[in-house]
Amino acid sequence: MKKKHLHCADAYPRATSDLMPHLPDPARRSLLKMMGATGAMGAASHLLAPLTALAQTTTGSDYKAIVCLFMYGGNDANNMVVPRDATEYALYRTGRTNLALQQNSLLPLTTTPVAEGATDPSRYGLHPAMAGLANLYTQQKMAVVANIGPLIAPTTKAQWNARSVPLPQGLFSHSDQQDAWQSAIYDTMGKTGWGGRMMERLIAEGSVNRGYACISMAGGNLWETGDSSLLAYKMSSSGNFGFDFYKAGNTTDPLTLAIQQTLADQRSHLFHQAWLSTMGRSIDMQQVLTAALKSSTVGTTFPNSDLGRQLNTVAKLISARSSLGLKRQVFFVSIGGFDTHGDDQMQQQNRLFGEISQAVSAFYQSTVDMGIADGVTLFSASDFGRTFASNGQGSDHGWGSHQFVVGGAVKGGQVLGAVPNQTLNGPDDTGAGRWIPTLSSDQMSAALARWFGADTSVIGTVLPHASAFNALDLLA
Image 1 (cartoon, one colour):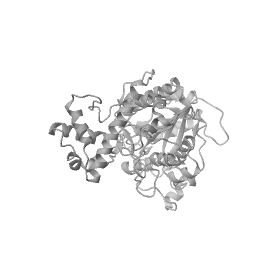
Image 2 (cartoon, rainbow, N blue to C red):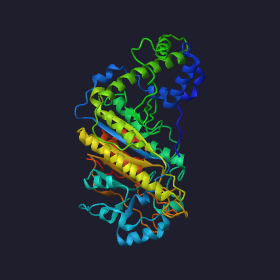
Image 3 (cartoon, rainbow, N blue to C red):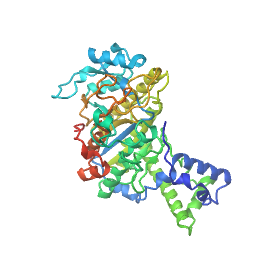
Image 4 (tube, rainbow, N blue to C red):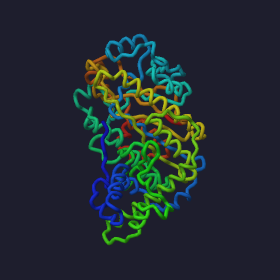
C-alpha cells in the first residue's frame, strides 16, 4: 500500500487550464493529464536557480549519492535474514510454522572477524533468492542492519508494557509508518522528509547545487520533500519526462508552437505568471537533463524488471554527473507487493527478493564500472517488519525489521545490531512476534548523512530524535 502525496499541480487544474488559450482542447487535456501524472509543477518548483549555475559547479572526486530503496507494504524480513545456528533455527522453525524456510536453502553469511559483543554473522543466512546480495556481503560491500525501526527513545519490553517511554505515533499502520521512515519525525505527522530537509540544509550552505538535487524514479514521496519548495524531480522508471512531447527547436509542430506562445504571454495574476515561469523552467531543465542522459553511457546489464529499469536510469543519471555539474544527489526508487497477509507470501517473497537482489547487484556493479562505487550508497527501508507468528496464511503488520546497505564505502560483511530473540512472547516481542527495534532508524539515517557530508548541527536539525542513540559505525 503506497501513500500518494499531492502537489500544487493536483490542486489547481482549472486555473492551469485557463493559462493555455492557444492550445486546442484535446492538446490541453493531454498536457494537463501528463503534468498530473508526472508532478510537473511539483517537480519544477525547486528548479529556480539559473541553468548556468549547473555548469559553475565542478564535481571532481567529491561526488556522492544516496539511493533510498523503499519496499512498500511492509517487508517480512524474518525470511530475509534467517538463523542457521541449530538452536536458533529450531526456535525460528517453531515460531514461523508454515512460513519457515528450509535450513539448507539459506545462503550463508560468511564469517568475518567479530568484535566483542557484535553479532556473529555466521549464525545467519539470506533468503535463497538473494544470491546477488549474498555475493556483495561476501565482498564486504553490503551490511545487514538488524532489527531496526522508528524509535523516539531506546525501548525495552518492560517500558513498552508500562508505556513509560514515548512511542512513535501510528505503529503498525502502513501510511503512518511509511511517513515515519521517510520523515524521521515520529511524535507527530511528518510533512517533510529527512532526505529533502538534509538537501535543503546543504544547499543553504552552498555545498550542493539545487538543480536535480532530488530525483525520484517512483513518483511523489515524502523522503525527498523539503521544508520550503524542495520536491523531487520525477521521472518514469525508463527515464521519460512529463514534457517528452515538447520538441525544442521545431518550428512546425503545433503543440510545441502553442506551448511556446503560451509561455511568451505576460499575465497580471501572480499565480498565473509564476505557473508559466515554472513550466518554462521545467521544460528548459528537461532539455538539459535529456541531453545529459543521451550522452551518458552505462555498459552494465540490468534485469528487465521495474526495479531494474529504475536503478538503470539512476545509474545513467549518475554517469552524467560531470556534465550536469553535480556534487550531491539523492534518488528514490521503490518496489511494492510486500503486504503479505495471504497464503501467497512464500511465492511473493521468492519473486520480490529475487528482483531486489538482481537489480541492486547490477546497480552496484554499474558504480564499479563507472569508478564511483565509493561515492554511491544504497539503503533499504520499508513500512515495518511483519509478525514472526503466522496468521495461518501469511504474516501481519509488525515493527522492527532488518535492512541492508550497499556501496563501496559500506563497512560490509557484518550484521550491525542484534537479531531478535526468536521466542514468541520473549524479551523482544510485543505480541505475535512484533519485534521491538533495538536500533533506531535514525541511527542508519545519521550514518548516511554523516558520510554524505552533513555536520552535527545539520544532523541534529534533520533527525530530531537521533541524539538519543549511539552512532552506527556503518560507512567509511
